[in-house]
Length: 394
Image 1 (cartoon, rainbow, N blue to C red):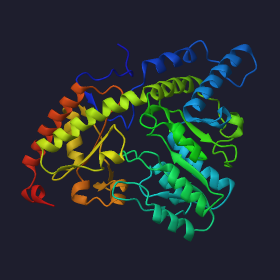
Image 2 (spheres, rainbow, N blue to C red):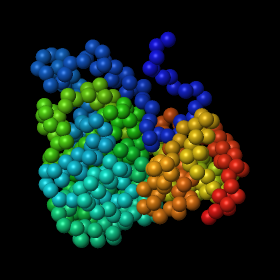
Image 3 (cartoon, helix red, strand yellow):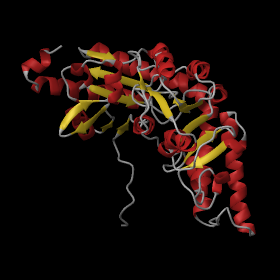
Image 4 (cartoon, rainbow, N blue to C red):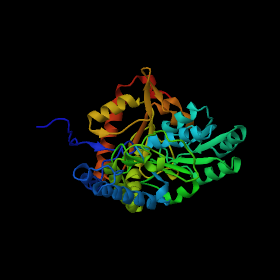
């Protein structure tokens, strides 16, 4: 038996689609020829290279159609982090100044902004950018070159009004470039309604059924940025490096299908999410939704559970075959609440029990029912063994 090729675990329930999604079979089928016979470099001049170039051009057209932009505005990258970094660090390298973003942004944006000395904007208790504070920060800050506001929060699923934030930013700083991290948005929002408001937009293929290691930066011709990678001048000299043709072709197919299925899947998964959350809140005390449902996407079931530490909870859930995640990171041996929950003002006693359950294309009603049973029994087990002061804390 060959080693190094793991099979999907049997008996596991996967509710971690916000972290990564299973590849669509159609995306796998689309990429296979470019892992085998069609292996030529798309920058070459012979016929086999031209075939690879044609596939690349076709994929670019598909992405442009879903985004509602021009094909020449599509830059293929290695994923969301590179796209986000380019939109912040690349812009500032071309035109020195600072960037601004909300405190609940993904670290790929937040750390890039902070590294360049830019200010961070408050968010409300649902994780949405505070427009009044954004206006104040922009008025008080010199040389703002880029404002970044994510479309959908990766932890709690909050939807930001990117158009309103963009209008406010341009009113304060007419020359500013507006970026949105839309990595979590593809399955839930029509990107054609977001793209007209921004100069730069980031995607990552593995969040919507494509492969890891490939993404997109939509960049308007007027958006000046210095490429992070230089060399061969690929992607119209905006991102050097031989293109990952197989990954790009697979990403385009996954994006096309996600776009076509969005409305149907949104209705289906909203019902499953509501059943999941309502049942857990009914069967367990001291469990609450972190963000109101009308403020977030259909696949997000983020909960805060009092009297439970999510590190122990995730360990037991994994043992029980339930794949989930938490909005915490281990720092210096102590569990610290996520920066998103801290920015939202969630009390530590609730934040330490944060649990992110995220649904996706392969989620079934049976998955949700099994997850409910596992969660109820696991949380009751943890609480039964918790110290009395932890169970009664507020």
